[in-house]
Amino acid sequence: MVFLLRLPFLYAHTLAKTNKKWLQKRHRSRWWKRGHFPRVPRDTVEDVVLNEVPELVQKMAPLGVLFFCATFNLCILQNLKDSLIVTRLGAETLPLLTSLGVLPLSVVFMGFYNKLVSRFPFKTVFYFAIAPLVAAYAIFSYAVFPIADFLHPHGLFNTFASAVPTGLHGALKILENWTFSSFFCVAELWGAVVISVLFWSLANDVCTVDEAKTIYPLMGVSANIALVIAGNFIKFVNKSFAGGSMQLSFHYLIGTVIVMTAAMMGAKLYIDKNIKSHHSDDDEEVQQQAAKQKAKKKGTFREGFAVMKGSPKIMNLALLVIGYSVSHRLFDIAWKSHLSVVFPDPIQYQTALADVSVWTGAATIVTMLTGKFVFQYLGWGTAALATPVVLLLAGGVFFGSSLLSVAGGASLAVAKFGAMAGNLTQVSCKAAKYSLFDPAKEMVYIEMDKDEKRRGKAAVDLVGSQVGKSGASWLSQGLLVCFGSVAASMPAIATLFTGTLMMWVVAVVRLKDRLKETEEQRKAAMELQKERERERQVASAVHDPEEAVHHSPKVVTLPGATEGPISNGVAVNGNGKTRHIERSKLTNGAGPSLLVRKGHKAGGNGFVSVSDTELNEDASDPDSKVTPR
Image (tube, rainbow, N blue to C red; front, side, top):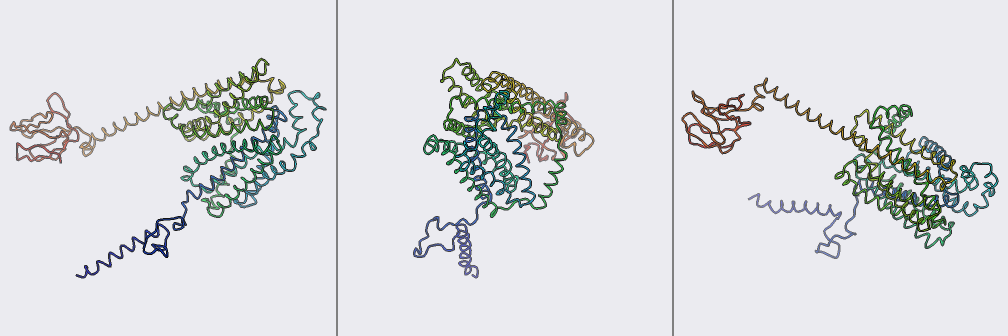
């Protein structure tokens, strides 16, 4: 009776808890709005207040804004600097600017960055490091570029050209147009400083390893979307606002860079206020000490070459990296020089580069989404060969058209066709590199042991990357010194380009054979290990009676003077009657009438071995069927 009286209250209490959970889920304090009693309203934006944003989305959104804006600015700056230098000074100045301008300035700026890290909190380093770059871009665009003709020492080239070899005329042009050269070098720092150092340092500071597995791939998609949008934006500005004026183009595009940088700082400020670093101060000290020890233990070129000499796998891997760096650098100089012939106007040249950026971003997104299927269905070798084969085929068409144009026997249509082939080569090469070449290169380290992986990666990074990048720049400059111009050295560039790609292809084939041998050896070792494990189990079964119950063959026999044979599905007992066995899978669980004799195998006596047998029979009834337990 008492329970019946309490039942309504128990029901009301349960309903109240359910209602409370429903209201908490929707962040409400009541069921209805005032004036709408007793109707329960539908969910609206005003009713649902998201006070707790998921942590992953909270990190992904500002980091995505940061990376998008940084890549957007990188696309604009690359288009501006290349269109300014190639059309005004010539493509012959690019190797000199890279070797004698960008490299020393990078060293100086990294020294400045290290000073900032040592003197200021890590959160403020981002602002102090990015501010000088943006200030330099703004000063050049709005103050220096309008009076560049007044600042340049015109006549310097004409005065000293006769005393300097033809291949070094680019150095005189760099000095004479020193403001343009300075902008090129500072603009070249954006990718190395803002993206490679500042952004990824920030991302590694706020993201854990598990979060990075989800966030970092999306950052790659964000960057390529930024390329597509930035390329179309450049074309829109030049068509709608610049009116063919390089100065106006600089004003609008550099202004956009400033606005995007402000958005980056806003996203960084949000991260500073709302997202905590997963590294403690002690972790930072440990990391700094580890970095110092790593710098002390850094290998030399001699040690790197020794590691490559001792491992054919590492040697071929280094040749892959060198092959890409040298071949792409040679192609890049020839392509940009040829592009300036077809598009001599800076705005037209800039628009052509914008088209390449758009197609590069779109193609990279597609190949990033489909690249895993290439590895899955076509294998590592096809994925690793994709980049050199694309360069060889598309680059061959480009160099063929360029050589015809240089020889003077081709029309403007052929030159434009060569420019289109060069654009296709650039787009295909970049897309294949990001989605196929880089993952294929990293997969090679998986098949190495720990020591070989550590030493091999250090050797490839030190020797392969440095020889590839620096060697390509100095090789290009050597060709210019020998032949005087990019156009004159085009046959030599095409020959070296083809030879480098062939070396690259041979290295991939050899590396594929090495990986195949390693895989076969690994499978053989696994089979040998399984065989030894089976032998060990049999040996232990012979010496261990309890283990023998599980691993030794068993024979069902009958007690008494006469032992009947066991046939498929039939058991024979001493009185000659047969009993059908419903399942051939039996175990030692019988009564005194039927036993399992251990250690006997089937032979010519008609007995059949039964493994893991199960027998459950009532021995008192000779006609009963054997049923599984």
